[in-house]
Length: 312
Image (cartoon, rainbow, N blue to C red; front, side, top):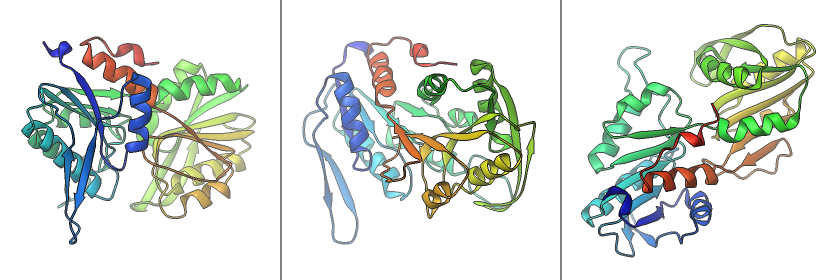
């Protein structure tokens, strides 16, 4: 039966640290695997123990470089060819998710292509967190367990006990997420409207709503260059916000993003360990998602509900 197959947790190279935390939460050893590297840059992952008849969970975020995605695909393929019972991809950060539609002529839809590649490799299920757009779940022809960072962010915000709390989204695309936090925290909500000149460059931004004298928390699924986030925070500070904190599940933080945050009006940026991130910045706090993923893996293994992992 589905729930009776032995469970084994493996990791690709980029997400090994998080995978080890998940394994500890589950009280199991991380499965043995290795990668052979060739001089031309090609690599070949290998399971160093039997997975025949097992439920195999492979942990890997697919943030750039593309080798991270391809390594996951090779591991899935290896598990299927080694007669694993089920292969579940645990993808804390689903990369290429910003390419979720044709927003201009003659462009790819990278998130759909990634989903097709995972399916072709033989994945039976995907567990992920805070997709850039909810509809990406529909790109898969296998079950997708979509977890939310609110499970750890909401309790953290509540513990701050901020008065005059206001929830904000850095752009209109995040309004649904911000509204969910606003209702749960019984707080007011404001929105930022931005006009982009090109990817990662914001030409114009305005705030819709009142922030004067308010403690603002900005909610987003990811922070990349931090340009939008910093612009929104500095604008709110100019409009009289009392304090500004930001919460983003995936800390991509490319280029000089950390420097931008350090020099901004943001008092604290709270992120998760969905992607490997090390920073000496006093403004950035990392919360682990290992426990919520461990609980979800256990529920999938036992064929039980995962809805208890959702705060809202």
